[in-house]
Length: 260
Image 1 (cartoon, rainbow, N blue to C red):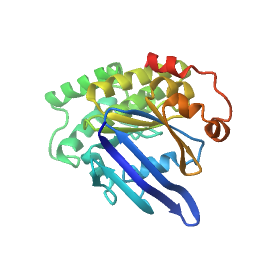
Image 2 (tube, rainbow, N blue to C red):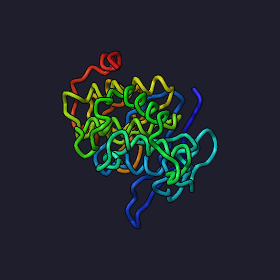
Image 3 (cartoon, rainbow, N blue to C red):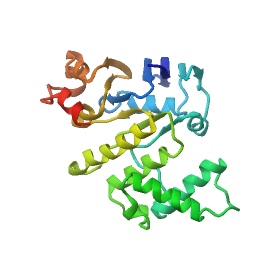
Image 4 (cartoon, rainbow, N blue to C red):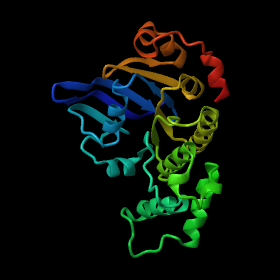
């Protein structure tokens, strides 16, 4: 496998508080990497540093062998690393279609084109194709504020995938989603991801989701990587059970991966 993303001794301090320290992580092409850890373990800090929302205090971030430290979120996105958020970053008072058209406009013109029409026939057709791929075409005319949480998550992820990123980072994709809907949501996302060939790193608290969809697992604790490896190995690690999951989970990891 070829390394797409590599961090070396990555750290972030907030005054005397260390939010992340000595993070050495490599993400390879096509991997689906789950990330677990309690609140405050450094997971989101790590994602924010990689995507340019937070400058590291020290260390390196390499994307395809080139440093991206100092690049802003838009530059990182254009380079090929896109993300979704724990709270979907959408225009809540606009329709689903309007949100997609605005995203298309920004992608094509780098800024929102004030003098160019967005609702062209070609743009609408592209928007419909995108929404169909994520199974949310029926919500096209609905305002975002009225959508179920799962649909908002899917829309946010769909917009992140517009640029056909080489790496997609997801921050708690099933957070706030109904229990009965979490697997359908992840099935839809992973189907689109596999079609695109992108690597995925996703933060998740639901261990069933982690077990079913991850091909590799990273456990964070106290701002550091506690374990990194095969899902079953990490979840059965004594330190991970003691400090992260808190107990033995009765999940057949090999069987869950086969379901993905």
